[in-house]
Image 1 (spheres, one colour):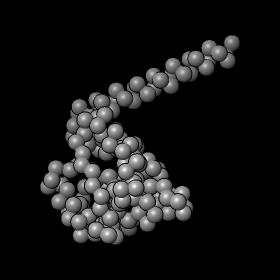
Image 2: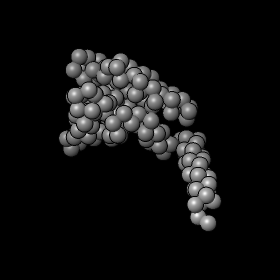
Image 3: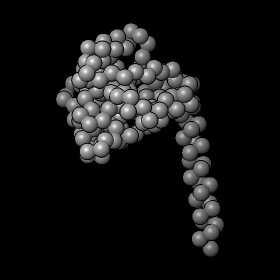
Image 4: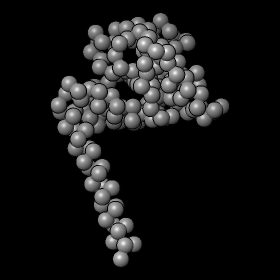
Length: 157
């Protein structure tokens, strides 16, 4: 994350990664205040066993792009809501990357979906993760169908 103020958002991703048993690390690297450290982290990420990088940042939100410029691993950007433009600035900064340096971008404060996307990417080479994802999807579908049955029973007579 770009700042410790992003931690409440990032904690949602951490919870998802824990749920799926995906190992993770949490760091604060600023694209502007610690660019050398951010670049070093990203450039060594593959060799250090990472499969996907998540980058949460608000305002200028250059962290995801700065990481993506220094690795060929998938980078998922999480635009964080700010005070001035309610996160639209971070969204546009994260999603507008030049050709050749892609960043997958989720919704403003969409850390849970960022983690789920990371799990999906990792599941390409991990059958256990793929099975967990499928089970979660099926459980989610069943919840919706249960609610549908209750609504139908109440209103469709």
